[in-house]
Image 1 (cartoon, rainbow over the protein chains, first blue to last red):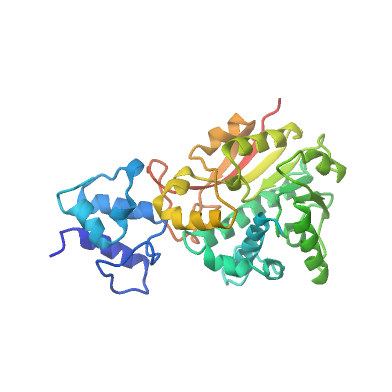
Image 2 (cartoon, rainbow over the protein chains, first blue to last red; image 1 turned 90 degrees about the vertical axis):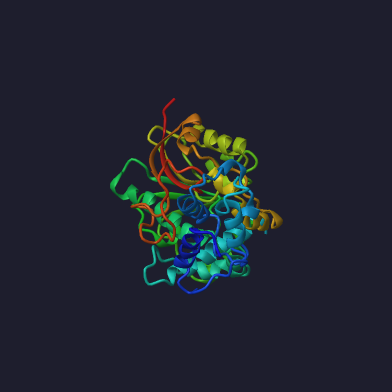
Amino acid sequence: MPAPGIEKVSDWILGRHPERTHLAFEEDLIESRLVDSLSFVELVYVIEDASGVEVDFDNIDIADFKTLSAIEKAFFAGAGVS
Amino acid sequence: MHAVSYTAQWMAAARSLESEREDALFADPLASALAAPDGFRLIERYAGGGLLPFISIRTRFLDDAIGELRSDPSIRQVVLIAAGMDTRAFRLDWPEDTVVFEVDHEPLLVEKQRRLTELGAEPRVDRRVVPADLTREWLPDLEKAGFDPARPTLWVAEALTFFLTEEQAGGLLNTLGSVSAPGSRLALDILGRALLRSPFSKPFLDRLADDGTPWIFGTDEPEEFLLAHGWKVDAIKEPGQPGAGEGRWPYEVQPPERRGANRLWLLQAEYLEG
C-alpha cells in the first residue's frame, strides 16, 4: 500500500505530462525528464504540502527524488525523514 | 570555430524553431541558415529545463529593450556584445540614425557574413562588425569601428555572463561603464545561482562542460550585483511574468520568497554617472 499523500505527487507529475496516463513507482523521474531543473522546485513544494515534511534545499540528495518510490521512502514513510 | 560559436548555432536553431510557431514571439527568417551545421543537433543535446522557451522569451525581451529606442531619442548607439548569430540588425525596426556594433570572435563574424551575403540579407541599420577577443582588451577595437564613448550607448549582453566567472562578469560591467556616457543603458540576462547548484540541472550542465562551454556564473541578487558595478536595475523580470513571455512559460512563476527556486533574470539597467 503506498503511503497516503504520495498519490498527490504522482498526480502532479502526470498533470504536467498530459501525454502520460501512468507513472510507475520505480520510473526514473530525472532520466525520463518528467521532472527537470525548473519544475523541481514545484515538485519539492508539492512534496512538502502532501507530506508535511520540510525539505532542506541546501542539503538535497538527488537520490531522494529519483523515483516515486524514493520520494515515498524519504518523505512519506514517517521514518528516515531528512 | 571557437567553442562558444557552437552556442551561437544552438541559439540560432532555437530562434528558427520559435519563428515557425503560430504564436511566435518574434520572426527571424535568417536563423535556420545560421544554425547550421550543429545548431539543431545541440537543441536535442541540451533539451529540457525550459531552455527553448527561455531563449525565445529572452530574445523578445531584448528586442523590446531595443524597441524602446524608437520613443527615446537619447541613445543612437547600440553594442551587441558576443553577438553570435544574432540578426537584430536585419530584422528589427531601427531609428534612422542608429549605429549597431556586433562584437564577437573574428572567425564567427567572417562565417556569419559569408552566410548572410549568400542569403542576400541587407541590414536595416548602420551595422558594423567588430572582430575582438572579449577575454582581452577589446574597447580599442570597438572605437576603431567608430564607437563614440561620448555618446550614450545601449549595451546588449545576451547569454554572455553565464560563461564568465563572477570576477569576469563584474569586470565586464566595469568595462562597459568606463565608456558609458551619461544616460547609457544595459540589457542582459543572468542565471540564478540555484540553477547552477540544483542536482536536477547537473546532467545538462555536465553536457555543456563536456562541450567546452560550461555555465559558471549565476546570482540570486542580480540587482545588488549590477549596482556594485555601477549599473542601477530599472526593469527586472523572470520568464512567465507580464512583459517576459507571459503565457509562454511552461512553469509556475515562483513568488520571490520561495527558497530553492531556479531563477532566470531578465534585466535592464541604467549607468550611474560618475
